[in-house]
Image (tube, rainbow, N blue to C red; front, top):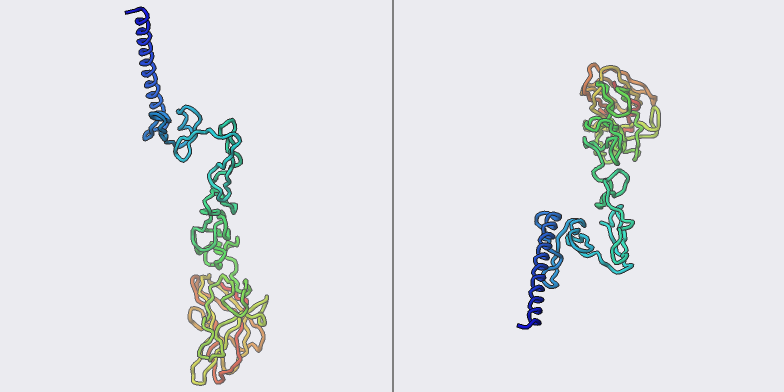
Amino acid sequence: MSLEHKVTENRIGLLSKIGSYFRKSLASKIISYSLAGSLALGAGYSLLNNYGCGDEKIDIKCQKDSDCDALSGNYECISGICESKLCNEGETELCGTTNVGECKYGTKTCINNKWGDCIDAINSTSEICDEKDNNCDGNIDEGLYVDNDNDNYSAYSSCGGSKNDCNDSNPNISPGQYERRNNSTDDNCDGNINELLIEDFEGNITNLGDFASLNSKIPWVTPTNPNGWCGSFESRAWELTEFYKFSGTYGAESGRCLDDDNGWYAPSCIGTTIETTNGQMSFYHRFIQTYFCDFSFYIDGNRIAFLNDTGGNWQQFITNVSTPGQHSFEWCLEDCGFNPWDEGRARLDYIIFP
């Protein structure tokens, strides 16, 4: 064998050894990257390289940008896949999470063929009481309204609503309640305990003449059907009136209670059932007795008094409630007779309950 052939053979052997070394080294590096990627990405992720044999691309799964750090080059986590950050110089695109509510998309710009930071994006925050959609879910101040006792009066700490319920765990205590004078509780949240319970028929009246429009804390009951046995032209429901009142702007006026000349009549009554203490109660009444009509006052179903003809003047009636507890109080124009067109009506104002 010539010297030239031997040199050539030695060179080929050397190159073969060098190639074998680099193949083993590359395999070692690939395994090393694989282990690093597995540690970085956790169980369930595959990371050998961004490419397999030839130019076949392998999608590398990720959850955040740092999961792509083991890859050679600039990568970021986009839609769960590691994608190259390379871009065209000066290119811009939207960034951020959403454009709903207070959230806003920002922009990022390609600088030196790499995406820059997201600028001016506004991301979601915790919802606070400010009439804004802070957490960007399409709702405003959700979950911040507080009415634990479901009485339609919200707690002081509530976001929205009345924010004036002094005891939001008890539906019997709220600004809409009357003051029960037989306990030691501020039932109506006015800062006072067991103050006088007065009905003056003022309220926030929305429809004069309709007793149901009286915004009273006392649960009044009056006939709901406007016409009774008295005929189609006669109403037996009590009304609110601005013409007959003892004080203030309004008073209460009975409907007409008339006999049909056959002994049938429909009384015109107003009443309530509430808790009171024992002691004195009073009210003012006005009544002109015609055709034998009676204006009667009842406590717990017992007639306490015939309220006599006052001659068109207001008179005060005073009586006592003997025991504390729940009592019913009722005023009735009744027992009218002889004339179905009797114009007599009873009036009532400024009731002080015990």
